[in-house]
Image 1 (cartoon, rainbow, N blue to C red):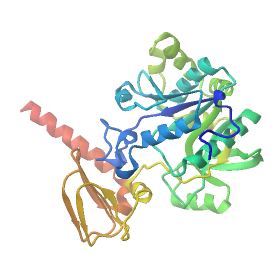
Image 2 (image 1 turned 135 degrees about the horizontal axis):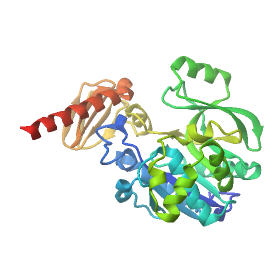
Image 3 (image 1 turned 90 degrees about the vertical axis):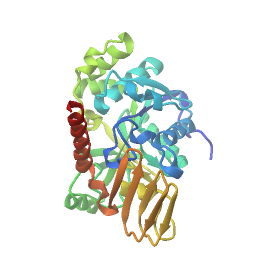
Image 4 (image 1 turned 180 degrees about the vertical axis):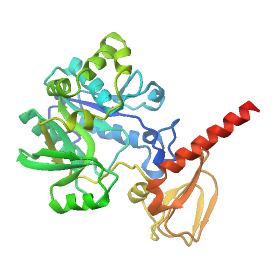
Length: 354
């Protein structure tokens, strides 16, 4: 297969990779000091590096990573420049900043592809073809676009999008659905029109500016103030709000193209276990370890370790800390991790006083 996206003029395409988040549900692999996109996931490498490779495959006119100043040292990838926000303000502000950057470089007829830095895509070639289809739909119909992921089950960790009437190679978007409970997720799947919201978007730049002005006024202008004049004050005054909520859920001009590739946001240890190579007993992981009589486990260590007689466990050991939890419950560790971190801070404050 060719290395470029078919039927899309690369001169029209600008790519923004959004980096951020602490990845609490992947502690202790991911921490605030080294967020999830930049952690080496054993044989997979880092998610950010894989994202950068997918971007280069597209051969866009330009590509940028957007994140906080603190992340700049991690965001060194061939073919991507770095654009620092004054401070993190969630994805609505980051998309506006990317859009303003694309507008000055490419004009209103350019196409902006927005990708999270921390997603796993199983087939870069099929990803490129999906980008091409989405670009054709967005350009021909002047709509905002999102990639929809074919659900493999009634997941409650993802938002859903429901398709409407056909639109070229995709569909008009009927509605966004916030992360549902299991019963609602099952009902959505039974209707047969629901996909997972991938968080991967494509926008005609001029249409993006118009729609943001209509649905989230002030965000684009704040981004331009920072980008063109170096004035951070309007950006710092913005609320922290996602582009889904600020724009995509409100716009009447959104299209969805089904993604023809395997995908994961790698947001939990169960999802990491699913995408890693596994031995015949279903164990995955890496590090200097010996595994005896274990099955269906995720076993990660940065120092010599023996894992013995374990079933369905996630055991993670790094210099940042240790975690042992049943794998099927490992998607619910956030509150415990946050409580542990507060305990550590409290002990440190007590130690300083004494």
